[in-house]
Amino acid sequence: MTSTTAKFILPQTSEIPQWQPATWEDYLAACEKLQFEEARIFYYEGYLWIDMGNEGPQHARFNNLLTLLFGFWFASKGRQAFDDLGGCVIVKPKVGAGAPDRILYIGTDFPQWQSGEPRRINLDRSRIPDLVVETADTTLASDLDEKKRLYAALQIPEYWVVDIQGQRVLAFRLQENGKYQECDFSVALEGLPIALLSETLKLLGEGNGMAAMWFAQQIENLSADREQQEC
Image (tube, rainbow, N blue to C red; front, side):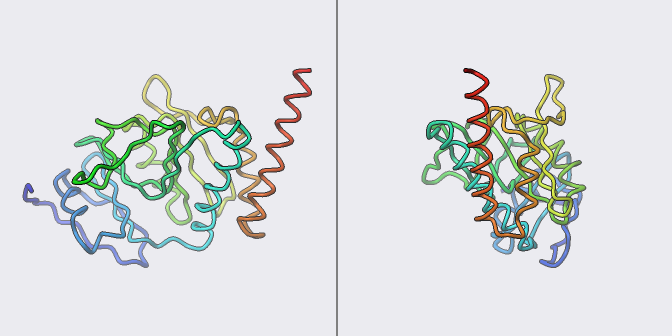
């Protein structure tokens, strides 16, 4: 492996991650270090960001809720196939890399790991995810700045930022100019109102199970309303 010259500071688990100057080789070296085995590591435009896993209960609660929401949504679409990956690494060599809270592939042609390969999805070789999600408890500024630019550079077509403290979900769609524009309806999830996700987020105090069941009822109502409009 190429030797590195940049020095990055080992973050503590109680610290909010900070972007640090680094090379692509530093990123690759960090991915191989045992002390970072459970960390989420990001790289973009000469900077490295290492999250040692300081998520709180609400962060974890919503991440698990997302799997339920995806399941209810795609079940309502006739059991459409999808693959929901949490914390998986995606890279575009020498462009950028990240480990989003959620990666969503819609359809059956999602990446499969082969023995002997690095434990990350190489976007030069595999299909780009349909959706990437970051759940922000203490990292909202970075999720709306550096990570937003990173995912645009990786050509992720849709990006959600879940603002836990603000109880809202922000969604962005990649435009032809390579930049994100905020949207009110998901394209990846075929017209799902983003406001409905924000309302579901506000119910987390009742537990993600109750929030998920409320969401399921709402999308059932949406389907019924559409059917009546088509009659």
